[in-house]
Image 1 (cartoon, rainbow, N blue to C red):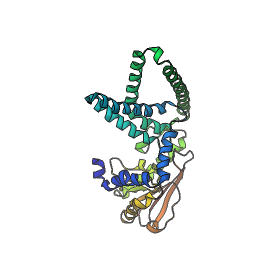
Image 2 (cartoon, helix red, strand yellow):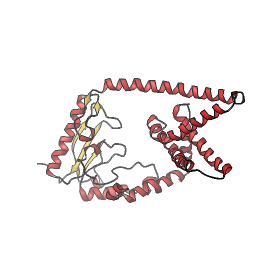
Image 3 (cartoon, one colour):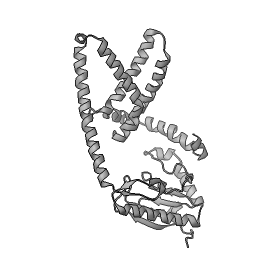
Image 4 (cartoon, rainbow, N blue to C red):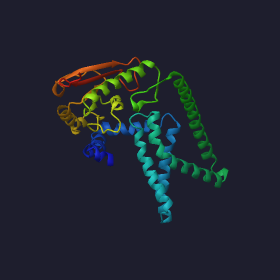
Length: 311
């Protein structure tokens, strides 16, 4: 929150995290049904990441029922209850794409409830006569076996992929400083990034107060070229929007005013139409990456105001 206030982005934070999210979630049956569908899609096919959410729901149900029976809530139950609330809330982050990255950051808060569930299951099986829970034990064994088998294959596949990447990416980035140490598959990429960084440094030597912003919502490579320890000229630099939210969120109006007032360097992964607030801009230089970086278009174009003096 301190960073948000320093960056004068409180309004942006409220819009993105409350107003926009509310409109997105309750803006119509398409959005709400999409969320629910993707959450439960993430449970199929069976994988390790399908278990923590169900375990968290089980612990949540148990925490709700036990105090009703015992007429009291222990401090340990209260602490676990807070963790379970966090875990279940995090489940929604499996949306919109149930991929390994979404699983990892969404599933991490679920690990504690998951281990509590395993502990409860262990004591239940230990204390209950085998003859009384034979059917449930066999069912649980089959379920866990299927989960573990799919997880083993998943881990094996990712391990082989990691080895392949280690062998593929051999060249270390030197500049910009944010990417220093990152390995890429081509020396050409290293040279091209250094070229971009050198161009921008030359501009900043002549115009030390000039800002750099990006015009692509899904392309944030420009942020790696921001000067060290410097707040971006406008924050957020880009906004993920979905259809009707663009009309609600006023960032694009702020961006237009910022461009007209500050005349920043503008980065884009594609050619821009030089109209409206960009009518006084020109293309300074462009780089076509021989090996595109992940999530990048393969191009880097930098625009500056026509009156910017570089000689």
